[in-house]
Image (tube, rainbow, N blue to C red; front, side):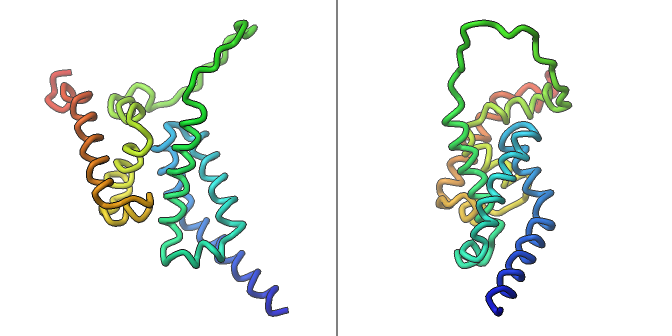
Length: 171
C-alpha cells in the first residue's frame, strides 16, 4: 500500500504545481503562439506529457517549471516547423469564416513579435515578460547563455528596426 500513497502524493504534488504555475504558463504560451487558443493547446499538451511522468521530471532537476517552459518552447518550435507551410485547397469554402476579435491584433509590438522566429520570441518573452535572467532562460530552453545572448540581440535588432518610428514618436 505504500506505493499507492506515494502515487497519490505525486498526483497531489503535480496538481499543486499546475495550480500555481498555470497562469504564467498560459501567458508564456500566448506570447509564444500569438493567440490564447493555441497557447491553451500547447500548455495542455505539455502538461499531459509532464504529468504522466511527474516523478521522472522531478528527478531531472530542482526546477520543474524550467523543464515545462523548455518543453513548451520545443513543442512550439516543432509545431511551427510542421505547419508553417501553406495548405492549398482545390476549392474555396462555401462560407467565409467569421473573424475572431483579438485586441492585440493591430498592436505594432505584437505584430513585430509574431514575425520573430520562435526561439527568438521565446527568449524575449522569458527575458522581458517573465523577468528571467540569462542563466534561467538558458536552463529553461536547454541552450547556452551565449545562445540566449545572441538570440536576444538578434530579436532586439529586428524589433528596433520594425518599431523605430514608434519608439521615436514619428508614427
